[in-house]
Length: 451
Image 1 (cartoon, rainbow, N blue to C red):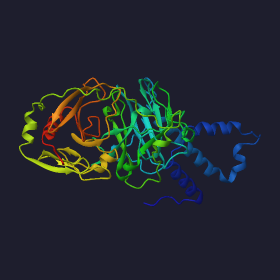
Image 2: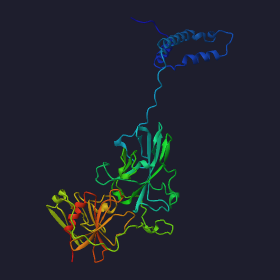
Image 3: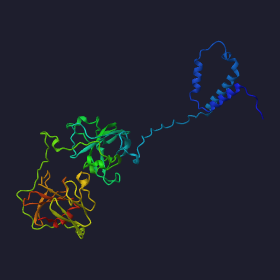
């Protein structure tokens, strides 16, 4: 079947209709057209009189527009019933754990800001620059340091009664190369609280504050003061919202981010004890309120190691090694390890069931093993008064110094004179409390001093 012939005008109308049906008209289209028509100045002649030749096309367009308008009315949704609930604003996207990387300046991550009830907002962290130091700054870490700057922003979406801010951050050194698992945490916030110290004026501003609560936006620079020796390992930024008033090591991590990959730092600020600030311009020594008793108390007749079945079992098989610095040969359990020499740490100074890296201990990055041996010129004491005892060890008479559980200092140590002077120089043997003491006492009974 053939249709009727179409004119060019019909084609124009058909094209118009097709194009119109392919475009979603704005909801206010009809109203806008009506207002435009109403605002058009009217002339006495009819509206069609000026467009006589195009009357058929115009009529077709008008009919089509009317059909579209009617369709909009028929198909428009009906507002029946109560108005819909407002769509909640979606929470900001948080960075998944695998993507928390802050190794390059400009890197950004977002984490949940937490309190005891859960998430109360977000924390945005932007990586700043790595710095070798700041003008006139003296490191308080008692080691060579460098710095990484982070800009931190807390954005609460509800009020919290808990504190939040700079105190919730620490860093960890991945000594084992297995990512952040259970590494020891360290505080590394330079400048904050050091307003009176040299170098503070060169700190980035504003510094991130802390110890606040409520629903205020909190932002500022967090400056991590990092040991130069840590540059050889992966470093992690750690966030934890819980209280850790008993020490940073008791902080419970909630999230972590890779902060730095192994590489030489851009520079370091060396620790120089002679430049450590004090009123006189000289270092202030630790006060010594309790020292070895004088006159020397009488020694006990015998030395009986504490009863410990597990320690006895460890000494069923033994090995020994010389400590050249102390001039002694030390016998220890066959299943334990000792250290190689590093810098001024002699071989055969540290002992424990795990492998021991003297370099890490020397640089303050590794924990002390259960048993350690050092030489000290004298025992300088401290502000806590331990229990002092005198005990025979071989052909020497040793001091045993024990701190109680309610004191900040812990453990047991033995001071064995290396000469006839009971006050020094001394072999200082330290045991962790309580796991290392029984083993140390059995090692002392087997000490062999060079003639």
